[in-house]
Image: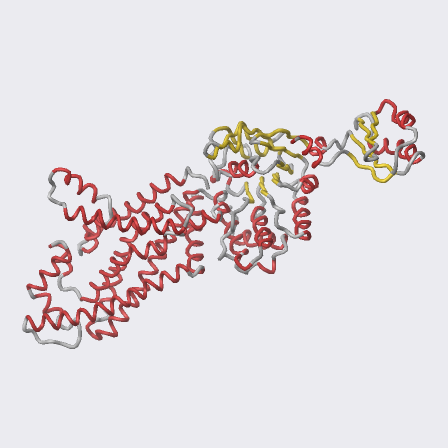
Length: 306
Length: 301
C-alpha cells in the first residue's frame, strides 16, 4: 500500500493530559479517509500535529513520504482546513486565496484562476471581492474549505468541513469532495457518520488518542457479508428460507424489529444472486419492506465504542 | 530561495493589508498629527525662547522664529544649553549651526518613534495567532518567512510614516517661518528621516519579538509599553551610575544591549559613527526578533 500519511506512535500532551497516546495510522494514497471519534478523542490534535501547528512529544510523522511537515518540502503539496480558525477578516476572498496560491508557488495568473475556480466551486463567485468580515459564518466556512484545494495539493486534511453549512451547501460540498476522490488524498474528520459513510472509502475510529480500528468502510459496515431484509411480519417457515440459502450463509430473524439478517460471503455468492434466490421465497411467506446491505457506520461505531 | 520569495510576498501582503485595515492608517495619521503639532508648538516655543534670549543678550528681537538662530548659536549660554541637551561635545559640534527646523524634526522623529512602533507593530502577530489566521499560512510557508515578512512589512510602514510626517512637518515650518525654513532643508530633513527610520528598527524587533510570546493583541501592546518604560529606566540607571566603580562596571555592557546607547551616533554628521550606529541598531533589531523567534518556532500555533 502506498501511503500518503503515516503516523507512528504519536504522542501529544497538553499539560498532563495525553491528547494523542501512541496513535498509529496509515492513510493510503488517493483514498478518502474519515476520522471518527468522540469529542476530545484526538482527531483535531492529530490533524494539527500532522500540519506542524503542534509539536508532538514523541512519535513519527511521514507526510507524503518526506518526513514530518517542512515548508520547503511540503509547501503547496499539503493543505488543511483547521477547526476554529478565522480567516483574516479585512481581506477579500479572491485576493486572499490568490495570496495563498502565490505562497504555494503558483504564478500570479495561475493563482488567480485557481482562487476564482475554487470560489465558484463553493458558490461564492459573486462575493469574491467582499471583505470576509461581511460574510456569514457558512460563507466563511466555504472559503476555508476552498483554500484547501488551491493548486490541487496531494494531501488535504479537512476538520469538520460540513459543520455550519446549510443543507444545500453541505450537499454541494459533499459532491465537490466526492469528485476529487481519485485525484487527491483526503482525510475528513467529522461527527456526522452519514457524511463519512457517503464520502469515505476508509475510516479510522479514534478514541482516547489511539486508533482503535482502521479499515475500508465496506469492511467495517460489512457491506460484503450482511444483507438485512426488513419484513412486514415474521416469516411463516424460516427453515424453508434457510434451505434456500443452503451452505452460502446463515439466517437470523429478530421478531422485535421484523428483520431477517443474512450473513454470507461475497466471494462465495454475490449479493445480487443471493437476492434473486431469497426474495421470491420471502415474498411467498410475508411482505418485504426494505433490503439493506451491511450495517450503517453509525451502528458499527456505536458497537465499537460500547 | 523560495523562502526569500515568501518573505517578499508576505511583506507586500502585510503592507497592503495594514493600510487597508485602517488601523495602521490611524496610527500613521496619529503620528503625522503629532509631528505637525510638535513642530507647531516647538516653533512657538522657539519664538518665545528667542525673544527672551534676545532681550537677555541684548540682540535685536524678531517676529520670525529662527531669524536670530545663527546669532543664537554663537551665544555661550545657548551653546551650553544645547551641549547639555545633546549629551556629547561631538554631537554638539555636529549639530551646531543647523537650522532649528531640521533639529526640531530630528528630535520629534526620534522621540515619538518608539510609541509609533508600539502602535503599529505590537498587535500584528498576536492578532493572527489569536484568531488562528496564521494556520492558513503556516502550512504554505515557514514560520521564519512569516515572521520576517511581518517584520519587514512593519518597518516599511514606519518608513512611510516618517516620510509623511516629514513632509507635513516641513509644511508647518514653511507656513510658520517662511524663508527661514528654506526648501534646501528638505534634503536634510529627509536625511534625518532615514536616521529615525534606522532608529526604529531595534524597537520593531523588540516589540515584535515580544509579541511572539503571546496570542493576545492587548497583552502584546502592554508588553510593548512596559518594555519602553523598562528601557527608559535602564537608560536612566546606566546614565546616572556611570562612575564605573563596583557593580557599576557592568553598566556600560548592559547599556550596549539597548538602542539608547547608539542613538546619539545617528546624530553625528560624519559617516563612520553613522554607519557604526546603524549597524549596531539593525543588529539589535534582528537580535531581539531572533530571540522571540527562537521561542516562537517551537511553540504550538
